[in-house]
Amino acid sequence: MTVEQSIREKLNAAFSPEALQVVNESHKHAGHAGSPGTGESHFAVRVVSGAFAGKSRLERHRMVNNVLADELAGKIHALAVTALSSADAEKKTA
Image (cartoon, rainbow, N blue to C red; front, side, top):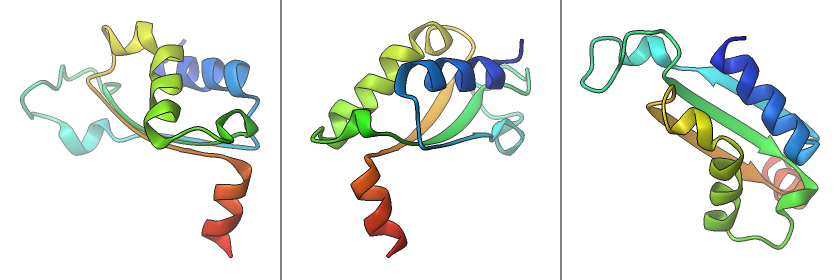
């Protein structure tokens, strides 16, 4: 299983998101310090879930980081997180 697939599966299981985007941005960082050259080290995720309702941005990021702790401890060098509640997502599209 790829790192991207693992991220998708874990976030889907933890948050039952209404929307989930996982973007592998590793190609943008090839050759940079800290980039292991695996092609699966830098990701951006956008998660929209009711699980984030009433939570601060910091709490939401911690929730995502906790779910992906194993990946962050080894395979992932960088993770950009956008975690929104359903209400937040509606505001951004309005």
